[in-house]
Amino acid sequence: MSGCAPARTAGSAAPSGADAVLVGFARALRAAGVAVSAERVHAFLRAVAVLRPG
View: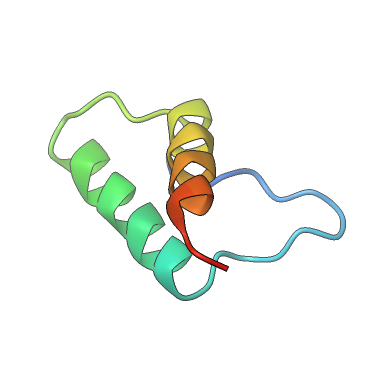
């Protein structure tokens, strides 16, 4: 897998706002050689979503 952005499915949207920043961070980690899989990015975004107020 060349990118670390979550795979899109019908009806899913590209990450926006803070999610886009977090996905960009994951891409930077991958470029630095860190093993960042799509599954890890999904888990990261879900965990951050739990922490967000509102």
